[in-house]
Image (cartoon, rainbow, N blue to C red; front, side, top):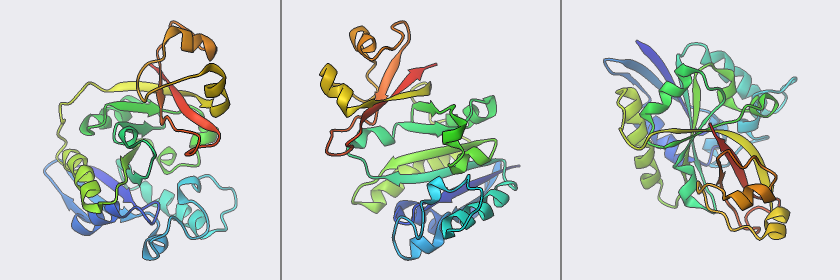
Length: 245
């Protein structure tokens, strides 16, 4: 029987995940056994993002000293008991359409990609830069996914969207939605570049040939922007580009 771990509240103010912990802390179906744990319990108690440092950036520290860095070391040892891990987040974004469409992976092994079949989001984003990925929870297990859901002002609505994927995972059921598309994270587009080239991009809408030429990208490859933000939301980056694999 497959053993699955769900990690919620890596950030303590993402409370839709906490409701999953309250309602389904552990159990089993005929195919899997699961457990839901709180990533950052001290931050949850205070309804704050973190206590001393961001747990979502604390999983590759040479000498842990903050509460979150020490917590990350405990979690990494605990991961060894499980076959798969799902790190569940609810994120407040200027563009609410993006997060619910994405699954984040840190490798493209067949087993990892197979686990994506149970998730409703169509887009799989892989960052091959290990120096960047090592800070995240999912890097430290062979088969782990990060699931991001748009955070709204209605915790129960956010929870319902999480619950759809959770139930598909524990029952190992494919939602049979749109075919998954795999991307490799490419690079950011700065706000300065946006102004220079007068770019008007949309999430997941492929770049046109002239836009790829402006950004010095191979014109025969498909690139899509994600997390397109106005300058008021992100002073540095207008969006990030993913190359379709």
